[in-house]
Image (tube, rainbow over all chains, first blue to last red; front, top):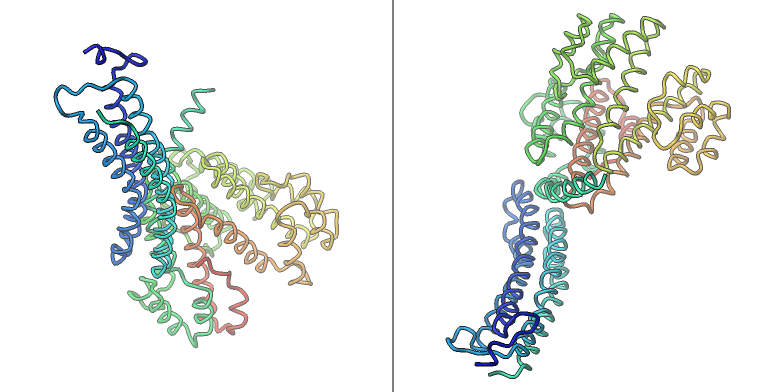
Length: 166
Length: 341
């Protein structure tokens, strides 16, 4: 009982863990939504003149959405690993803070990589508009940015696994 | 001051992504512009009817709907369609209105010349301006300028005053062009548009300088013909008159125009061929427009597409007029611009 009252920088362990979970999904979700919105507007423009390209453009438009998924999965892993939704769970502030730190790789890398991937994909959309046969190349270049979101996701999971569970 | 910077920044953000839709649709439309090879094939057509048929096949909608005899009307309608489309995809009307303003000044010039010089308007009046053409015609006829927007009224009044003073037919071209470029420069918001005006001003001034040189006119004549300076100051241009034409490329060495001037001189050899200069200037502008191909969210692709399409329509008009007058294909091809596509 004494543990749960202890705080780090004013926040108890559970609050740090929730913050980690919230940041992991919050930032990646924002990044993905903004990025998709940017690509989708260019795609809409292309489709307004050439509706037949929908099949090629949907992949490019959806590509920056994966970061949001990684963040969402990370948020769930935090809730699951540390039984945050189980009533009566108590976390040491030290552990809670570790969880928060572990969420940062996917949160920060996810946000930034989504925004930049959005730019690459939007440029890819305008390339596909001119060269319909080159959709594969445009997607490949977009996926290169994706790599770093995946690595951030893996880093967050490894860190979460390394934290001693209650 | 700080507040202004912040406002501009915020505007920059919204503006930046606002043209994403336009850019997407333009990337498709650009693929439908006539290519250099298509233009060459048009130039080789046996007669106007065949050229028109080839145009319809190449996808110019108006060509499919009307006969070649109505090519002027068809091209005017195509231009109107272009601006309707541009307006429909722009988040804000400013940029398209800015481009349309050029047609108002052009119309003003045509009406002024028709009224005061009592000549048939040789150049066409365009229906795509911001101000209805009839309104401009009415203002010119009655000399009541209050119905026109301020910049047009000012240009009209100044041109008439200059004409009354000098009785020179070029007064209308000189004054209205000067007012137009001054207005465009004043109202250009984006850096890209500002760069474009600078380019136009430089090309217009170089053209005036070349023409003045060709006619053996003095500095005072050129000074009247100059529009606001782009990147080359007026002094430099006036100074150029003192040099023989051969030395112009050398004295323009540190501007982007040295090669252009050298090419005009080399290709002409004789008195400067101003038609050739027009063609080379258009190619120069097209080269600048091609640099917007990597831009995604700003108004650059839209502006570039509008200007490229305008040049395409100009090329089609040149071909049709050439075919009707039985110009040989080689001569016609020489007059054509390179294509944006």
